[in-house]
Amino acid sequence: MSEADALRALMEADRWIDRVRSQKTHLPEITELTALEAKLRGLLKDLRDSEGALAPVQANLDTVAKESQRLRTRAKDLDDALSSSTASARELSAIQSELFHVRTLLAEREDRELELLVALEPAEARVESVKQLAQPGVRRRAELLETIAQLQSTLDDELVSLQRDRDERAVALSNSLRTRYDAALARVGTSGAAQVVEGRCDGCRLALSPLDYDRYRAQPPDTFMDCAECGRLLLP
Ligand SMILES: [Zn+2]
Image (cartoon, rainbow, N blue to C red; front, side, top):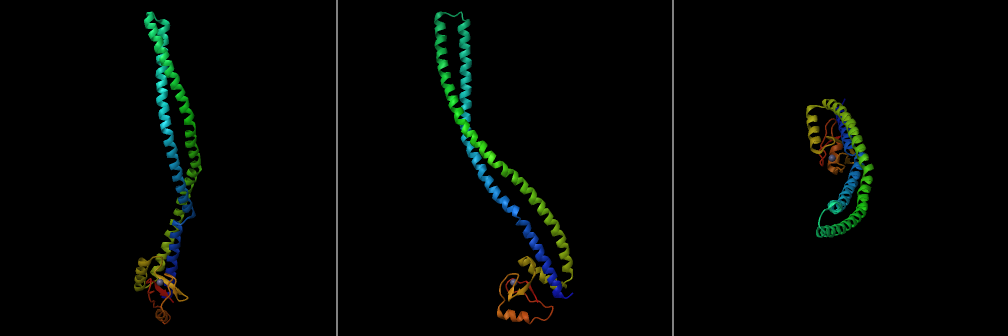
């Protein structure tokens, strides 16, 4: 195998590895997941807002319900006192007067309780509807995460075998050529060599200057000049 063939084989292996790596981070599932997560974040904000609107109504209702309960207990105690009392007429009159007052307050509290219950319903319905809207998205997100993990693990396995193949190809190069290739690869990525297509380096896609192009065409076999732009070794 000529040095040029060995170099080409290594370049192709590295370009393939680069494609698989890029595939790993550009899966359509990742694009879908990103959009879905943005949507879910929006719904989460809606949920917090509607829960925020619900909380004070619920807290009010709890306070009023507790107050009603206290008044009901007091009214019952007063009722019991009236029916069993051996109290004087004056004491009985005081109990009746308090009972009337307690019942008035209780009626007010119960009206307020009903109002709050009525207000609570739409606020609860909003929270529930946001949760239902989010449910299919949350399920899809879990599916996507699993699919992405599986696909990436498959691609990782492929990369391991591609890397092994690549290392075998690298051994076929002379030490000096491999050093130049690896230096260019480390500097610009993807591959350390490139082809010239229609006067352009297909690594950086820039045109060679007329002078460089003449030099390139006059290269003796198995010598490789660097691309003036990206530094990749130019294949004949
Ligand atoms: Zn180039």
